[in-house]
Length: 337
Ligand code: SF4
Image 1 (cartoon, protein in one colour):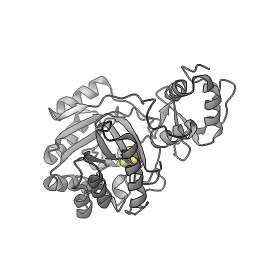
Image 2: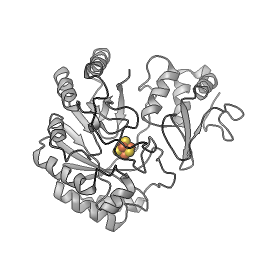
Image 3: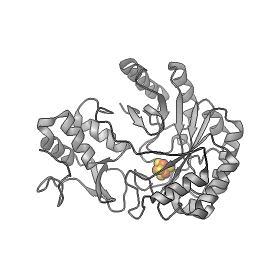
Image 4: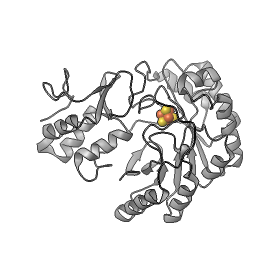
């Protein structure tokens, strides 16, 4: 499958069947916490990157194979910014005509200032935009947007969308230690959100490897502070483990490569997957993955993450050194070969 993945466990949407409507790392932001690395170059214009009928064919195949009982939501979630796909509105409407399942769109919210984008998203049952800053300065520091997408536009888009949209509006705030978890920064965000009036606020943490090595997790106090300042509509999202039975079809190596191209995996998760699927061939399969040249290894928070080779991290390196210790000086923790 090229466009459809899962169903995968989602922190907010239960078991979610994902549709990715943009090429890898096609985004108008380059967030410091992005798990797909830095954005080069920044996108500006919406485009019909892929054929709608090709994407719908994959959705139809998946729904006919898996049925809809094991799926809670069909979710547009890109390996970039979903609303940059210029035919998103038609795609949402077609998907809704194929299934009774609710449809969600995850977005950075930057294009909501455009009336046509708001209209397209109105067909979705839930829209989940981001807001990580309550000031122009912090917005520029965290999200590093293309110059066409100002903080004022971001806020205006959210305000206009809230006025028009009748579905569930759940805003995500990514909390970063020492950056936006101070009382002042949180009050600024809260002041914007008070004007917007989302149905829920989801406080998230950078559990996947951030683009920049200096990004830190928020402290426990920072999380408590955010919950208290955002009030009763806020909830902290708990990290979830990758489901070993998820997202893998066809050859195992290809399946893992497909997963890490959307969501970097901790090395222990890769090993756990292999131990589950090919218990007698863990070393052989790890070596095949490393030799593929399609993997980068990124170290964050003292852990090693496997990412797609096309991602751009400032300190990346390839996984092409299978011995000794399999992948360099340190062996993958938990490796049983
Ligand atoms: S986190 Fe999302 S919005 Fe930010 S750079 Fe990555 S894909 Fe774009």
